[in-house]
Length: 433
Image (tube, rainbow, N blue to C red; front, top):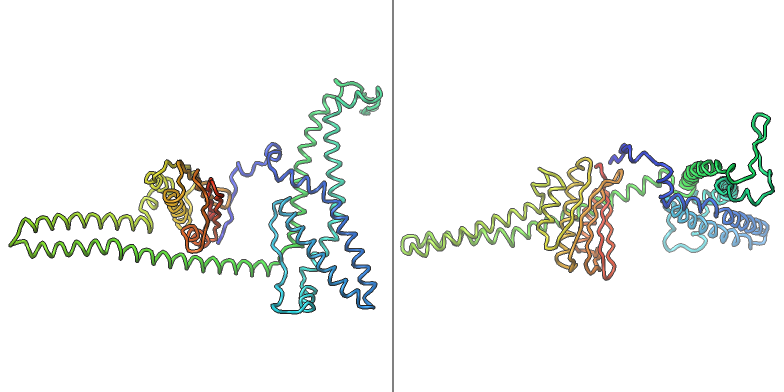
């Protein structure tokens, strides 16, 4: 699957105002300012623990100490992965080899000791201290300089007259009053804007280093990806099999029974055509009505397999048709620059259709909304209602089936439905398949 997309011009623009509004900027700034003491604590704890353990190896106490120290630094590394995700938005999976089942403590420790990820954790934790020191100094320097420049018109009055000056071409320009220092405000704001970019750049670099040292290597990533694709394929096959059984059941219990009744009515009408024309006419009319009901049943069944309007007119028209048939008012907002692939489009349609069916049956809602947008490499489908909540993706249920459909194309479905509502069902589907 290729999910590489070219970003639109609006997505490429990342100006200072957007940086200011982005929570990731301030989380990164907090990490760079506050992580220094944590890095120092890692460094001191590991140096002391390793030194004591290495010094007492000769009396075997150090072996236990080394084992406990190894467990300690792996715990530190696990904490760092969660911290990096919270600060920089970088998701890092634990890269460790699985522990042997039923093994004793010695074999588990040996598995940890021969795992390269364990030693990469140690390297990262030792690097955190000097990196954290540099990041702290850089952050403090830039933020302090920005704040000092912006506040200069106020602080200058607290200094002795003529305390601050600038030499230009052999001449001294004195900053000894509020008016003279007003140009420092835009200069400080400009430096603050530069600081925002520096914070995000340093945060990106730190996240890349953490991903390299704390994350799985290429082989592990490929294995994890293979396992994920195998699981997605299995769920997709299960979903297709469940859909096939549903179609068979609907045909057997619905249209097939109606067509059988039509055939029986026509047979009885033919038998009575000469002896009782009035009864035969009534049976023919009954068969005609049954045939129309069977046609409606087959049309609904075909719509459930793949609606023609989706093929002809796309998601907006198909979702609007579903919303029009709903028993509650539904607001529809489909904002897609181009049509997604047919597989993605079909799954998005069925997610919305099933979600709105659940709204009608269980939610006791008075309003629902459907929103479909594109977020870089993802098609985001959100169905929300103001009902009573409590929806769950229980195994064998409709929402679990939708999750299986989404997983079949490497998508993700989440359900947020606390008791009392509201309910939000969100599906993130790959924009390219």
